[in-house]
Image (tube, rainbow, N blue to C red; front, side, top):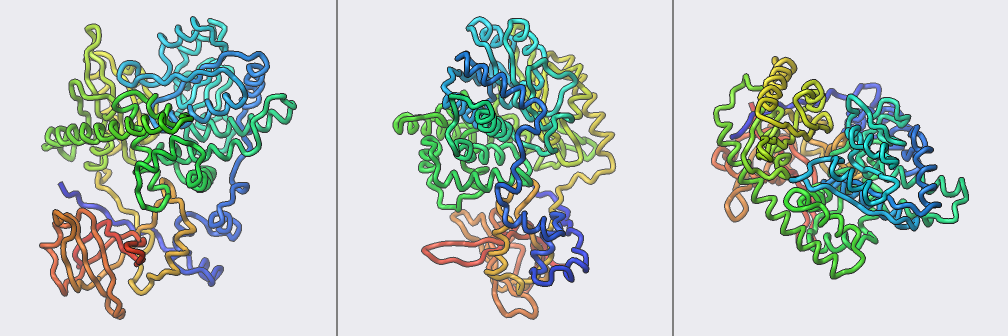
Length: 579
């Protein structure tokens, strides 16, 4: 199904901005304006993206001092510590960061990541009881814990203190932890930055380095220890779709530099296996590394990814890489099968249906989030996908949701909390568990009503935000050099999309073994130069276009490299015939 898209051109930069910065290319100035960068100091800081200009003091977190005092008491007393993580890429990376830091401090720490299929997200009572029975004195949760008030209260009753390192939305009641380090809390003390869990763990390590000098600890992390963790922070930041602005942009920019010379044997072996010649950038993290780390927890157990990231032996690392690659292949096949089945069931989806609910018996809980994302993208509305299973006579719905900008799905879950066994997430992504058919039906009815209230009158069509309309004559190597300064691209700092109109088709053909892709040579009135366009998965347009016709395109600017040659490439994002 081909869905119409709305082309939305961003407002042009103010005339006085061009007068203020006559030396800046007007296209670049427009991109800066789109990012609300209109003062010299802000423009300079953004384009240079220096580490020290953006990194915030970890002790801005109100509870950080208490967390450090408790941690170094554990160091002094050689206590057993449990690190309790999560099964996605962010959870595995943040668990690895904390494990490496505590190991370097000489602490005896164990890691526990729950099994998605059997245990679900976050702390559970059974494991809390095991922790108490095994003599742990301190538990540190990473990428979970904020919604585990009951389990943390139990640990406290057993004399076990908890430090929560999390970033998920604040629940109705906070857990009685010794310290909560979470930038999503309204009173955290930290600037309103959407850090991922690995970013929070990184702030925790930074705090360790400051505190160890403050108290003159006999056991210390070595100088520069924190910087070598930035490769993991970058992967998790991109993987959890955090906005690449402020501190997150620095994490990813410098994390990519660290990754290029990483000391992490597992990551090194993983990248060697991927053997992709693309430039090491945020897209490489999001499309190559993150899916493989996620695949472990989706198909098998996330310990495969964790073991890779803490591997100290080449043969061991190679074993985990092979397992991850097989998990990833399985994940792709299973996801494709379920998406195909879901689309068939949604054939009669009406405009009145503002939110998608779909469930399947025996579907793996690990892939329902991926399916929800694909359905939300395809139909441009919130989508909730559930794996339905029966345990001990009780029907259990394990679900994930993905949403659109106009609907905060986790806020919607909060309004339906009485029907949910557990839930958590972000405005556009969530996870949840529903027990019993009655609760599931009541939950579906209430959230459907909420979505209808919020989305009635909203055009449920995907919007393409275009940063600037340009002419082919504006495109040059110098412009591409200027665009590089906007890297890394990602959520909140998207790769710029441009549009060009009334391009004259000189030649059109399909490329690729199956003719799936489109290649067009175009010119523009007033400019004799011929430019090449490539449209991946646009091959069906070939039969609809002829030489001499005019087209409008939305495109990305990039570079095509082959056999040592380099040429500017215009990658089609959307296409229509000129009016």
